[in-house]
Image 1: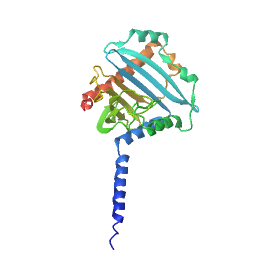
Image 2: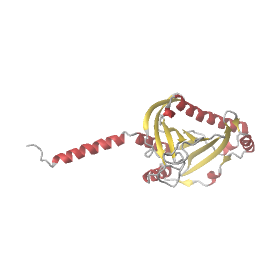
Image 3: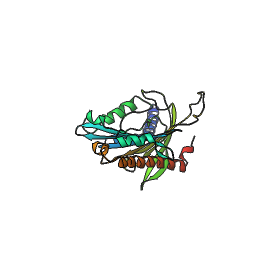
Image 4: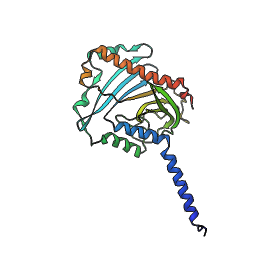
Length: 267
């Protein structure tokens, strides 16, 4: 006996649901989401964030790790003149030890077992559909709001990172980095975040057109065993300056590789 007529709509609905679930499970947004969660569930995360503008390049190193049952951070900053190295002001700050901020070491934030603090912060923002994210070990762009597509792979230090490209326009949330930006995210072979590059873009319909000097924000994610703690702060100024210069070159290399491979040329 053939199925009754009312069975067919149920069969069609089940097939559509299965297709939608399958598409979501293999989506680029979910792939990056899993990389973010794997990153924040680790024991440490260091971000080198470079803000590039026409006048100068500002480097911020944000190091976050677990200390007992708490999360602590050490931060440092340095400014560069493109093509000319550290600015005189940064050289002076490094010589005086003023570029390192260890105040968070005195204010540890209690964290549930399993690094639940950072994961919960991320999930809350994603659940609220915030366009831009804020917090340690997180990319700035919400991967589910960025319309990401897999672009291919990019070699980095002997490993191939999977690269995703998208476009994000601010819609909601308590934090706005750009009104609109092009987005690139790289995932490491171990499934953790490798990098994020954001380029400020024009907002259609808004007077002013494309920004004359668009700002680029590039973030490299690392998972080191040593941190920007007191031992780092007591190193000789030349050693600390060398660390910032190395991080600066690494971020520039990643940006350069994206440009070289043509990934930046998509509309």
